[in-house]
Amino acid sequence: MPPPPAWAVALAPVAPQIAELEARVAEARAAGRPIAPGEVDVWRALALTPPEAVRVVILGQDPYPTPGHADGLAFSVRPGVAPPRSLRNVFRELGDDLGIREPGTGSLEAWARQGVLLLNTALTVEEGAANAHARWGWGPVTDAIIDAASSGPPSVFVLWGRQAQAKAPRVAPRHTVLASAHPSPLSARTGFFGSRPFSRANAALVASGRGAIDWQL
Image (cartoon, rainbow, N blue to C red; front, side):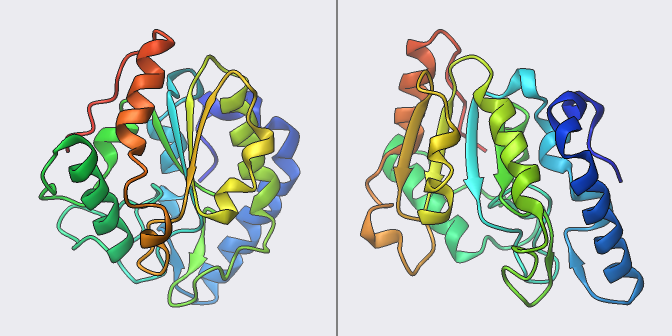
């Protein structure tokens, strides 16, 4: 499934890399290897959040490798799927920051539809093998997406963990960058908890005239 047309201009420079990736992923699927997310959801983050709508970028690592979890949006899971521990920590910080109770869903689609680009740095993974596709060539593709978001009006880039923070130099100075530890249970207590990304993002958006995100799910 090709990227959404709305992102065609941004992704034109990396079209050869996308073609190679799609062929490699298709070959893996044909060989019976379980690849997440499903084919129709690989570009879901871009489909739900076109470039002109981006107000916040939350950058993740790669899709959940647990079967049935990845839905094409960073940190999100399908409705009815119990939130993984990283997402539960996101919800804990959401509650501490804005007083929002833990939602009854792990789906973050409502955020995506408000202009929150939930982007992973790799858009596919082999189930059961975290980071399996990290070196497949997704980097230039997702860098092009970040560059396109950075070329737009003032937005907020939420960079959780060192891998996401490595992308900070790609973000133009007019944007707000909120960097902290990753919400993983291995690192959440080293700077993620208490970082207040949701209220700080809304403050920056309001200050730039772009309006606050409704973080309630």
